[in-house]
Length: 80
Image 1 (cartoon, rainbow, N blue to C red):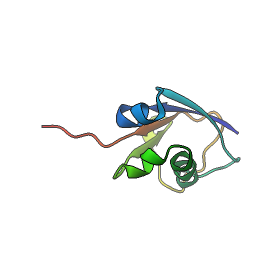
Image 2 (image 1 turned 30 degrees about the vertical axis):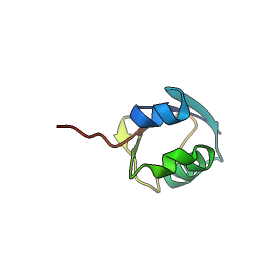
Image 3 (image 1 turned 120 degrees about the vertical axis):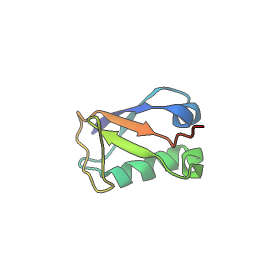
Image 4 (image 1 turned 180 degrees about the vertical axis):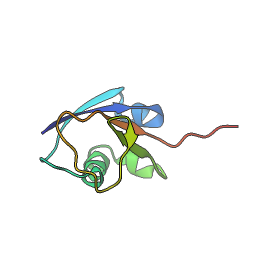
């Protein structure tokens, strides 16, 4: 299936774009997606954590993605 992923913050800098088009197996889980992304962009694996939002809600690791899902990769944010 084809996925479109919106990237923010350091994830956007690592990938070099604010959006990523990716081909993934049908019914891939969020964990599977993260493993795939870390394989393609090893620097993502150096981040301590980041969240995945699907259809404007944070997604659990076992959530099964669908082709038309709106996916966003949200890196950790620090503030002061």
